[in-house]
Amino acid sequence: MGYCGTKRWKSSKVSLELLGKAREIAEKLDGEVVAVLLGYEVEKLTDTLIHHGADRVILIDNINLKHYTTDAYTKAICEVAKEKNPEIIFIGATYIGRDLGPRVAARLKTGLTADCTGLDVDDETKNLLMTRPAFGGNIMATIECPNHRPQMSTVRPGVFSVPCADYGRE
Amino acid sequence: MNILVFIKQVPDTNEVRIDPKTGTLIREGVPSIINPDDMNAIEEALRIKEEVGAKVTVVTMGPQQAEKALREALAMGVDEAVLLTDRAFAGADTWATSLVLAKAAEKLGYDLIFAGRQAIDGDTAQVGPEIAEHLNLPQVTYVEKVEVLDGEVRVRRALEDGYETLRVKLPCLLTCIKELNNPRYMNIYDIFTCYSKEIKVMGLSDLELQKEEVGLIGSPTKVKKSFTKGPKAQGEKYDVPALEAANIITEKLKGMHLI
Ligand SMILES: Cc1cc2nc3c(=O)[nH]c(=O)nc-3n(C[C@H](O)[C@H](O)[C@H](O)COP(=O)(O)OP(=O)(O)OC[C@H]3O[C@@H](n4cnc5c(N)ncnc54)[C@H](O)[C@@H]3O)c2cc1C
Image 1 (spheres, chains in turn purple, cyan):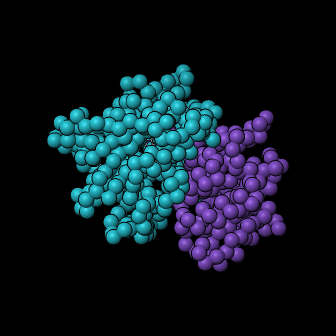
Image 2 (cartoon, rainbow over the protein chains, first blue to last red; image 1 turned 120 degrees about the horizontal axis):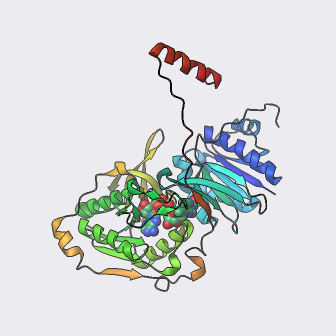
Image 3 (cartoon, helix red, strand yellow; image 1 turned 90 degrees about the vertical axis):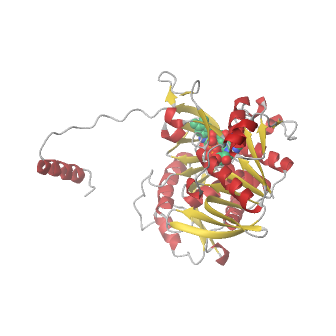
């Protein structure tokens, strides 16, 4: 039961990159990809998310989400996470994603792997394997979050490619 | 006003060497410095102290030798220094680190908290926001300008494509980037007195924390393995006139469907 949440505020490219990767991971885990879309009057973006690999989109459209605030966005994501109990949450490692990610992880009392450049699933344990650079890129580390859920990571923009849109997906 | 500044002692990464056999970092003999963003955090706290008056306390979690980072901060002019050290704290990820730092903040009291945006070793930029969450405080990350007003601060935060200016009620937590200011040097007077000042030391029991909540055991994330990036494969060399070089390049790019 892999359940991947992806988070986006604008039609940012990294969100689409995440969807491609989330799709790949979800297939390995036999789970589904759910995109969480926050904003105001952003409904038209839901199709793009589906076309790029989301099975479902959770849309929270509210005037309070028009501009990013740490408070409102953390609250919205945490409510969704508490209700849906996702296995995995991916967030783009943009300035905003790196403001939001640790706040959400701390509230959900779980681990967060920063700035991942590689994501895979352990064949045996089915845990997410998150690989990231540290020490200014001098060292790479593969990190696991074995006993806490969701497993969370922020992912660097431009690392994974945007999947080809499939306009037939519904 | 009480200002807390969280600082981390980090290896000077220009000097970092990796053991070619084990792929791990060689820490012995590597000089340690105060994390660069944290220098900006100290500077900003001192600037506010000079402008409106404040007591500035630096706090670090680390082994005994992290005391040196605290002495350096004292030599820059901060008022007090606190070392959080305990064998149980070792191996902490950002969740467990931020829990210890947040507990210390509760014990010490604060109106304004500064952290660096990111440490140059762990490189996660997660500790600041996680402390703020543990303390249930508003946060602003990537701060490049701070003005103290009455009971609130006006701050400018950097974004990829510009910046935004926010007003935040105190108490709050701000994470600093190098654009914020130019950190001062240690001054002669404080260098002389920094060794006579007392450093407050706190451990697990002082913070009323349990062993299971901190350090390696309290950390949700585990480093499964670490390795150095393999060297890049050798490139191809051409020694040809410019025009021919241009052709080779365009052919290659076409081959990769980039143009
Ligand atoms: C190779 C490697 C990879 C890692 N990857 C992860 C990961 O993905 N997720 C994870 O949760 N942990 C990870 N860790 C553990 C993490 O490095 C430690 O928890 C570290 O103590 C804090 O993280 P940081 O260095 O990234 O700090 P950052 O979050 O980048 O630091 C930001 C600011 O927080 C303050 N701060 C940080 N540490 C201290 C301290 N000890 N004392 C006082 N102030 C402090 C400083 O103001 C600093 O500027 C990793 C460790 C290694 C060795």
